[in-house]
Image (tube, rainbow, N blue to C red; front, side, top):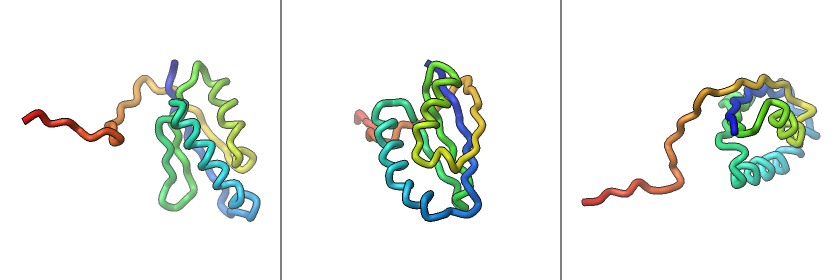
Length: 98
């Protein structure tokens, strides 16, 4: 399995259809995160960029995953292959043995 950083450009003007798709987008992302397909999903403060780390076999699979996004018709993106992607797990508390 390979990791890819997807740099997504969001539209400058958010129309009603786009805004109505946001809850479905968030639900899909949560599902893909639970499945381990997406490990990170970040939105810039100005709401113009998304960054997504996707785990897939190849770029074609990443494109298929992106194509399932409810907001897909509104975005442009670049897929970057990652050599590694390190994160600190925040879901489990760190254990201290005193």
